[in-house]
Length: 437
Image 1: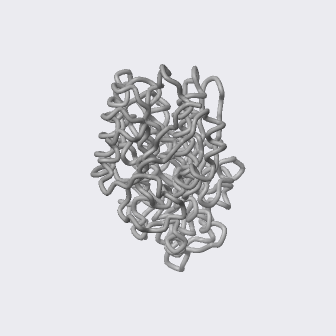
Image 2 (image 1 turned 135 degrees about the vertical axis):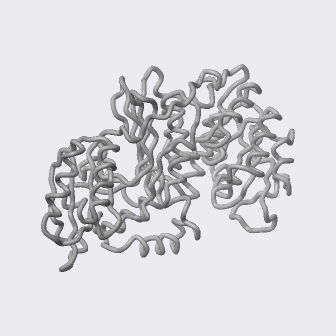
Image 3 (image 1 turned 60 degrees about the vertical axis):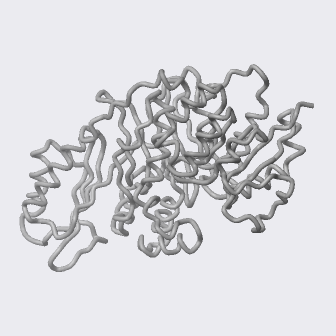
């Protein structure tokens, strides 16, 4: 039997401890599958003596994770520290420079420094695996890197943040407010004490940037993503969506257009009959549209110790299966030097249907004025109605508009005109309607 693959783990929180436990509990099965044992020979974490539910007494302890990363007693460095700078970046860089394979779950690190790290990996002839960085336990990275050869991707989109999906699911199912759902998510551990990174779309954006590079062979451009969160979604929006045959989801969407590559993260209305509309709770889903395969939808656990650990262990096992002389595939599907410069599409030319909610003063001529502004911008309306369940009082009414396919620029211009006309009581709500799997 071949020599054991020696693994060093930096970060022994929920995911790191789960990885160590799975490698120990499944040791015999992994040996059979990989043709060689996998042994954890080194670990590093902030606190040494804490009980993590797994025996790590045979592993050498490192107070400094960078020393573990460069140690010649490992073949694979597993980075589960987190963060896009500091120790995580220093450790992954050191491990790659030392000629060690790297497995990481760190989407922020890859979104910011993925290209530079990929260059080192390619130069050193080692693997940089990151299945756990996007959509948890769903094997979307492996699918896009390995299983879709010859396919040209036209669009990739999905539910990439379990916290947001949990909140929107409960808002619809139980009729409770965003604020109350967020408090429950924090109490249950689905949301952080400071939930901004999740609910304002940053987490989804980092994951989308990685998928975009894989899908279109472009350089990662995490700063060129149009982004809206879900904190402004109300029960009025949830109810109106349901009555219109839609469900609201926070989607990350990347697609190739005539003007470039469009990357966007925002609340979206998807038809309730679509498959992605049935993805509830903390579950994630990724849809990939291609010229040969057509449309593929992958769904499963997107977060949590076991789901993330499963992806990390899968990446480690892939390395264990590789044999001397094996030619490693490029980190982002093609060599870094062949990745094309990212050309950002003009977001305001985005075409599609739109849901528009307006809270207006209840006075004669408001409906006609709104319809006029829409017509001036060549927006065809599927419907315009006074909504029965909105913030209706004697002095104000809620008007719901659903447009046929139009452009982002036209919608924004029309809504701005209605606002300047002085008809609105509150900030307008605009939600895109997405064609979905």
